[in-house]
Image (tube, rainbow, N blue to C red; front, top):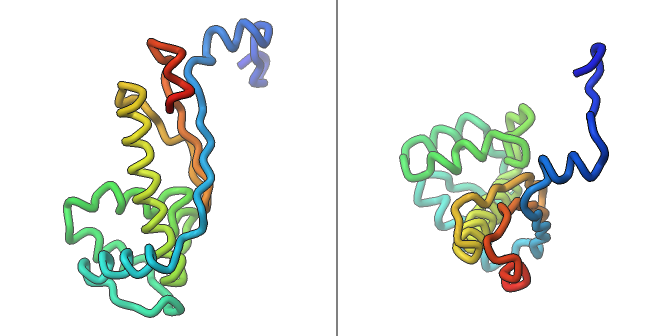
Amino acid sequence: QVDGQLRCLGSVQQVKSLHGTGHEVPVKFKPVSEELRVFASREVEAIGLRMDYTDILERSTAIRALSLNPMLNGKLQRLQIAGGPFGQGAEQVPFGAFIDWWVLDGLVGRLQAFLAQQAGTSKVALVERHGLSARFRLPDLADPLALPRL
């Protein structure tokens, strides 16, 4: 910060060489299929959430159900942040939207694990996720020729 204003000191190339490491991978998923919705509904029923797609799910109900299973702690956290169905202060969501989020959350997690395995590092970061889109950051690869294989 300089004189109360945020400024970037240095040329674009200097800033990129100092802070611009790694690669970003944008991803757009296909809309959730009915088959995946049915599968996710069964998973969600197993933790005590049984509703019709058009019903309204309360934040407290979802949190209570996920809190009962320690293996779902990560999903419980993602449920309440930006990109999650109860992010940005939402108290209610259509159950169908929750199911779609459940499916996509699983796909994003599996893709992140795949990218980490292929890149040979656990440092693959999810930068953002909104709807059907996600963006991952990969660290600099030891072998730059490995990028096209990802």
